[in-house]
Amino acid sequence: MWQDKINGLFELFGGLFITFSCIKLYRDKIVRGVSFVHIAYFTVWGYWNIEYYSNLEQWMSFTGSLAVTLINTVWLGMLIYYIRRERNDKNSVS
Image 1 (cartoon, helix red, strand yellow):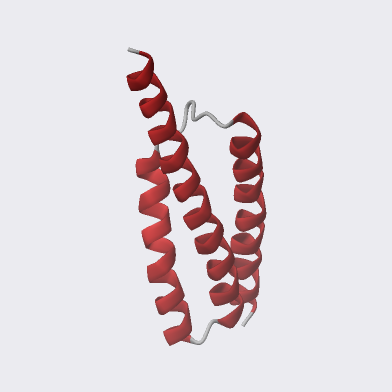
Image 2 (tube, rainbow, N blue to C red):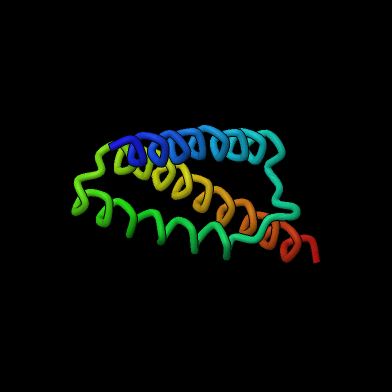
């Protein structure tokens, strides 16, 4: 089904583009202008999509969803880590 292929490509490219955000955050080591709340929401939605696409047997979308969800999970973990680190650094200086 062509719709599955197109949707899967959108998701795969989404995973690639989110990877750029992870790389930037790793280099900067500081969170600015991004809320972890929306990343958490889309990560949870991604886990749902993995289940949903597999039940629909839309395997390209399933594969793309795996990529997006995996990298969103990494990005969310990085965001939480760097936010906590900055808060701890501020508290130790005071």
